[in-house]
Image 1: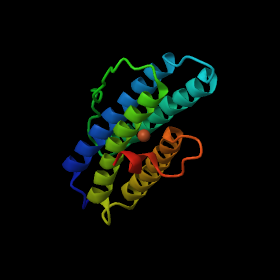
Image 2 (image 1 turned 90 degrees about the vertical axis):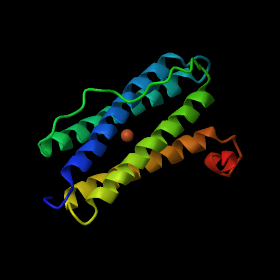
Image 3 (image 1 turned 120 degrees about the vertical axis):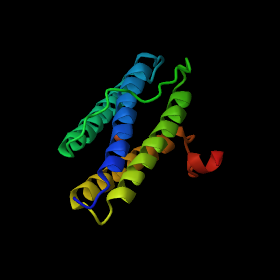
Length: 154
Ligand SMILES: [Fe+2]
């Protein structure tokens, strides 16, 4: 633990805290704007994502204070695209989740071989965020389409 560059690690953790908190607000906001037949399961899925982002934010915040640093009270960028179509929400979510995933990878690069616990934490978060992105990618495919959505737009 003493081998890590604490200032850099806390910097990454604070950006993650802000990104996860932005996720809480973003998913909650989306959940108000779902209309149509699919509303009930989609609202419930979006609220589950908001809850998960909050748990992630809390875990990240606990790490910041465990390292003896002060957690940011800021929140990541929130873009109101005024979209009420589910596809647009999911594409936006895929984009912002990819940024969070990038930050968890940055965290892993910082702590790898230096802190077993932080390394374990970042790997678990990378797993969770990648599985989440894969789920959203599948939701963005048309029924019967096998190719990943991310590959189609790449
Ligand atoms: Fe997350």
